[in-house]
Amino acid sequence: MTPNLDYLIHIAQQAGEILMQGYLQKHEIRHKGRIDLVTEMDTRSEDYLLGEIRRDFKDHTIITEESGHLDGLEDHCWFIDPLDGTANYAHGVPIFSVTVAYAYRNQVALAVTVDPSRAHCFSAERGQGAFLNGQPIHVSTTQALVDAMLVTGFPTDLKDPTKNNLDNFSRFLKNVQSIRRLGSAAIDMAYVAAGWLDGYWEIGIHPWDIAAGTLLVEEAGGLVTNLQGEENYFKSPYSLIATNPVLHAKMRTMLQVTDDR
Image (cartoon, rainbow, N blue to C red; front, side, top):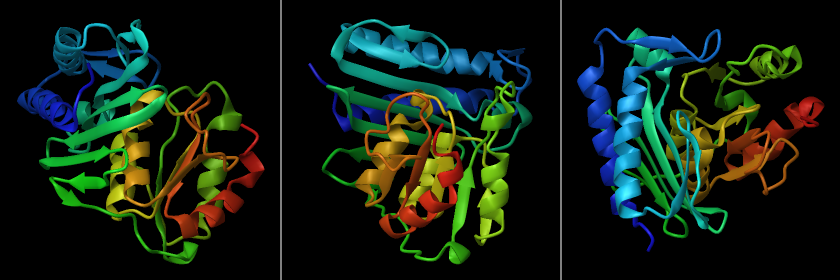
Protein backbone atom coordinates (compact mmCIF):
# COMPACT_ATOMS: atom_id res chain seq x y z
CA MET A 1 0.00 0.00 0.00
CA THR A 2 1.35 3.43 -0.95
CA PRO A 3 0.18 6.96 -0.09
CA ASN A 4 -1.00 9.61 -2.53
CA LEU A 5 -0.18 13.31 -2.59
CA ASP A 6 -3.49 14.32 -1.03
CA TYR A 7 -2.64 12.20 1.99
CA LEU A 8 0.70 13.98 2.50
CA ILE A 9 -0.95 17.37 2.06
CA HIS A 10 -3.59 16.53 4.65
CA ILE A 11 -1.25 15.34 7.38
CA ALA A 12 1.26 18.15 6.78
CA GLN A 13 -1.48 20.77 6.98
CA GLN A 14 -2.86 19.22 10.16
CA ALA A 15 0.61 19.25 11.70
CA GLY A 16 0.90 22.89 10.65
CA GLU A 17 -2.32 23.66 12.51
CA ILE A 18 -0.81 22.10 15.63
CA LEU A 19 2.18 24.40 15.30
CA MET A 20 -0.03 27.47 14.87
CA GLN A 21 -1.90 26.60 18.07
CA GLY A 22 1.37 27.03 19.96
CA TYR A 23 2.83 29.89 17.96
CA LEU A 24 3.81 32.99 19.99
CA GLN A 25 3.21 31.07 23.22
CA LYS A 26 5.78 30.34 25.91
CA HIS A 27 7.62 27.12 25.06
CA GLU A 28 9.49 24.37 26.81
CA ILE A 29 12.91 24.61 25.17
CA ARG A 30 15.75 22.15 25.44
CA HIS A 31 19.07 22.07 23.64
CA LYS A 32 20.23 19.18 21.45
CA GLY A 33 23.39 21.24 20.88
CA ARG A 34 24.63 24.66 21.90
CA ILE A 35 22.45 26.39 19.29
CA ASP A 36 20.25 23.44 18.24
CA LEU A 37 16.84 23.85 19.87
CA VAL A 38 13.79 21.63 20.25
CA THR A 39 10.43 22.62 21.72
CA GLU A 40 7.42 20.70 22.95
CA MET A 41 5.72 21.70 19.68
CA ASP A 42 8.31 19.80 17.62
CA THR A 43 7.28 16.74 19.62
CA ARG A 44 3.52 17.35 19.33
CA SER A 45 3.73 17.81 15.58
CA GLU A 46 5.91 14.72 15.18
CA ASP A 47 3.68 12.60 17.43
CA TYR A 48 0.71 13.47 15.22
CA LEU A 49 2.54 12.67 11.99
CA LEU A 50 3.97 9.40 13.30
CA GLY A 51 0.59 8.36 14.64
CA GLU A 52 -1.11 8.91 11.28
CA ILE A 53 1.58 7.17 9.22
CA ARG A 54 1.99 4.27 11.65
CA ARG A 55 -1.77 3.70 11.61
CA ASP A 56 -2.15 3.83 7.83
CA PHE A 57 1.25 2.50 6.66
CA LYS A 58 2.44 0.55 9.68
CA ASP A 59 5.10 -1.44 7.83
CA HIS A 60 6.87 1.60 6.27
CA THR A 61 10.25 2.96 7.33
CA ILE A 62 10.18 6.47 8.82
CA ILE A 63 13.18 8.78 9.23
CA THR A 64 12.36 11.79 11.35
CA GLU A 65 14.28 14.51 13.13
CA GLU A 66 13.27 13.85 16.71
CA SER A 67 12.64 10.09 16.80
CA GLY A 68 15.37 9.04 14.37
CA HIS A 69 15.13 5.91 12.22
CA LEU A 70 12.01 3.77 12.68
CA ASP A 71 12.50 0.46 10.90
CA GLY A 72 10.15 -0.89 8.27
CA LEU A 73 10.09 -2.00 4.65
CA GLU A 74 13.15 -0.64 2.81
CA ASP A 75 11.17 0.09 -0.37
CA HIS A 76 8.84 2.49 1.45
CA CYS A 77 10.48 5.31 3.40
CA TRP A 78 9.16 8.56 4.87
CA PHE A 79 11.24 11.62 5.73
CA ILE A 80 9.69 13.98 8.26
CA ASP A 81 10.66 17.25 9.87
CA PRO A 82 7.74 18.21 12.12
CA LEU A 83 9.06 21.75 12.68
CA ASP A 84 11.79 22.99 10.38
CA GLY A 85 12.92 26.36 11.68
CA THR A 86 12.60 25.67 15.40
CA ALA A 87 14.79 28.61 16.41
CA ASN A 88 12.60 30.97 14.37
CA TYR A 89 9.46 29.46 15.90
CA ALA A 90 10.80 29.72 19.45
CA HIS A 91 11.66 33.39 18.91
CA GLY A 92 8.35 34.23 17.25
CA VAL A 93 9.80 34.68 13.76
CA PRO A 94 7.13 33.47 11.28
CA ILE A 95 9.45 31.44 9.04
CA PHE A 96 9.00 27.75 9.84
CA SER A 97 7.45 24.72 8.20
CA VAL A 98 6.32 21.13 8.29
CA THR A 99 7.97 19.04 5.61
CA VAL A 100 7.06 15.47 4.63
CA ALA A 101 8.38 13.28 1.82
CA TYR A 102 7.66 9.71 0.76
CA ALA A 103 10.29 7.72 -1.12
CA TYR A 104 9.73 4.50 -3.05
CA ARG A 105 12.77 2.33 -3.74
CA ASN A 106 15.21 5.07 -2.70
CA GLN A 107 13.65 7.79 -4.87
CA VAL A 108 11.49 10.57 -3.46
CA ALA A 109 8.09 10.21 -5.10
CA LEU A 110 5.86 12.60 -3.12
CA ALA A 111 6.72 15.82 -1.32
CA VAL A 112 4.94 18.46 0.72
CA THR A 113 6.22 21.50 2.60
CA VAL A 114 3.65 23.55 4.49
CA ASP A 115 4.29 27.06 5.80
CA PRO A 116 1.31 27.35 8.18
CA SER A 117 1.88 31.00 9.06
CA ARG A 118 1.23 32.00 5.43
CA ALA A 119 -1.11 29.16 4.46
CA HIS A 120 1.39 28.08 1.81
CA CYS A 121 1.32 24.44 0.75
CA PHE A 122 4.08 23.44 -1.66
CA SER A 123 3.61 19.99 -3.18
CA ALA A 124 5.07 17.75 -5.86
CA GLU A 125 4.64 14.28 -7.31
CA ARG A 126 7.41 12.83 -9.41
CA GLY A 127 6.66 13.38 -13.08
CA GLN A 128 3.61 15.55 -12.36
CA GLY A 129 5.10 18.99 -11.62
CA ALA A 130 5.31 21.19 -8.53
CA PHE A 131 2.56 23.33 -7.06
CA LEU A 132 1.79 26.06 -4.54
CA ASN A 133 -1.74 25.78 -3.19
CA GLY A 134 -2.64 23.80 -6.29
CA GLN A 135 -1.16 26.23 -8.83
CA PRO A 136 1.91 25.26 -10.90
CA ILE A 137 5.26 26.75 -9.92
CA HIS A 138 8.57 26.99 -11.74
CA VAL A 139 12.13 27.90 -10.88
CA SER A 140 13.38 31.34 -11.90
CA THR A 141 14.87 32.17 -15.29
CA THR A 142 17.69 34.30 -13.84
CA GLN A 143 20.88 33.64 -15.79
CA ALA A 144 23.56 35.87 -14.23
CA LEU A 145 24.89 35.54 -10.71
CA VAL A 146 24.92 39.32 -10.36
CA ASP A 147 21.13 39.26 -10.75
CA ALA A 148 20.59 36.30 -8.43
CA MET A 149 19.17 36.25 -4.92
CA LEU A 150 20.53 33.11 -3.25
CA VAL A 151 19.74 31.42 0.05
CA THR A 152 21.80 29.22 2.34
CA GLY A 153 22.09 27.95 5.90
CA PHE A 154 24.74 27.21 8.47
CA PRO A 155 25.32 24.08 10.54
CA THR A 156 24.29 23.93 14.18
CA ASP A 157 27.35 21.80 14.94
CA LEU A 158 30.19 24.31 15.18
CA LYS A 159 32.93 21.82 16.04
CA ASP A 160 34.43 21.68 12.53
CA PRO A 161 35.32 25.21 11.36
CA THR A 162 36.15 23.94 7.84
CA LYS A 163 32.45 23.18 7.26
CA ASN A 164 30.86 26.33 8.61
CA ASN A 165 30.01 27.70 5.12
CA LEU A 166 31.44 31.14 5.88
CA ASP A 167 34.00 31.04 3.08
CA ASN A 168 31.31 30.15 0.56
CA PHE A 169 29.02 32.85 1.89
CA SER A 170 31.76 35.47 1.61
CA ARG A 171 32.67 34.41 -1.93
CA PHE A 172 29.06 34.49 -3.15
CA LEU A 173 28.35 37.78 -1.41
CA LYS A 174 30.87 39.51 -3.65
CA ASN A 175 29.34 38.09 -6.84
CA VAL A 176 25.56 37.97 -6.45
CA GLN A 177 22.76 40.45 -5.93
CA SER A 178 22.05 39.27 -2.40
CA ILE A 179 21.95 36.27 -0.06
CA ARG A 180 19.25 35.32 2.41
CA ARG A 181 19.47 33.10 5.49
CA LEU A 182 15.86 32.21 6.38
CA GLY A 183 16.47 29.49 8.96
CA SER A 184 14.41 26.72 7.32
CA ALA A 185 16.02 24.63 4.60
CA ALA A 186 12.61 23.27 3.59
CA ILE A 187 11.32 26.79 2.96
CA ASP A 188 14.58 27.74 1.22
CA MET A 189 14.08 25.00 -1.35
CA ALA A 190 10.35 25.63 -1.70
CA TYR A 191 11.09 29.27 -2.51
CA VAL A 192 13.64 28.20 -5.12
CA ALA A 193 11.00 25.91 -6.64
CA ALA A 194 8.56 28.83 -6.74
CA GLY A 195 11.12 31.10 -8.43
CA TRP A 196 11.09 33.55 -5.51
CA LEU A 197 14.75 32.77 -4.81
CA ASP A 198 17.19 31.85 -7.54
CA GLY A 199 19.40 29.26 -5.89
CA TYR A 200 20.18 27.36 -2.69
CA TRP A 201 23.30 25.70 -1.40
CA GLU A 202 24.19 24.18 1.94
CA ILE A 203 26.83 21.94 3.48
CA GLY A 204 25.98 19.00 5.71
CA ILE A 205 22.20 19.35 5.94
CA HIS A 206 19.95 16.55 7.23
CA PRO A 207 17.96 14.30 4.89
CA TRP A 208 14.61 15.10 6.53
CA ASP A 209 15.21 18.82 5.91
CA ILE A 210 15.73 18.51 2.16
CA ALA A 211 13.92 15.36 0.99
CA ALA A 212 10.73 17.20 0.03
CA GLY A 213 12.59 20.24 -1.25
CA THR A 214 14.69 18.32 -3.72
CA LEU A 215 11.61 16.95 -5.48
CA LEU A 216 9.91 20.35 -5.40
CA VAL A 217 12.87 21.96 -7.18
CA GLU A 218 13.26 19.16 -9.72
CA GLU A 219 9.56 19.08 -10.57
CA ALA A 220 9.61 22.88 -10.91
CA GLY A 221 12.24 22.56 -13.65
CA GLY A 222 15.32 23.03 -11.50
CA LEU A 223 18.52 21.05 -11.08
CA VAL A 224 19.66 19.51 -7.82
CA THR A 225 23.11 17.98 -7.31
CA ASN A 226 25.72 17.61 -4.62
CA LEU A 227 28.62 20.07 -4.59
CA GLN A 228 30.53 17.86 -7.04
CA GLY A 229 27.70 18.20 -9.56
CA GLU A 230 26.55 14.60 -9.16
CA GLU A 231 22.83 13.92 -9.44
CA ASN A 232 23.17 11.06 -6.95
CA TYR A 233 23.05 13.65 -4.18
CA PHE A 234 20.80 12.00 -1.60
CA LYS A 235 23.56 10.57 0.57
CA SER A 236 25.86 11.71 3.35
CA PRO A 237 27.03 14.45 3.85
CA TYR A 238 23.89 15.84 2.13
CA SER A 239 25.56 18.93 0.70
CA LEU A 240 23.49 20.42 -2.10
CA ILE A 241 23.14 22.94 -4.89
CA ALA A 242 19.56 23.57 -6.05
CA THR A 243 18.82 26.18 -8.70
CA ASN A 244 17.76 26.62 -12.31
CA PRO A 245 19.82 24.81 -14.98
CA VAL A 246 21.62 27.96 -16.17
CA LEU A 247 22.76 29.19 -12.76
CA HIS A 248 23.75 25.73 -11.60
CA ALA A 249 27.09 25.63 -13.42
CA LYS A 250 27.93 29.13 -12.21
CA MET A 251 27.13 28.28 -8.59
CA ARG A 252 29.09 25.05 -8.94
CA THR A 253 32.14 27.00 -10.10
CA MET A 254 31.89 29.31 -7.08
CA LEU A 255 31.76 26.31 -4.75
CA GLN A 256 34.53 24.28 -6.36
CA VAL A 257 37.13 25.07 -3.71
CA THR A 258 35.00 23.23 -1.13
CA ASP A 259 33.55 20.47 -3.30
CA ASP A 260 35.68 17.77 -1.67
CA ARG A 261 33.38 17.74 1.35
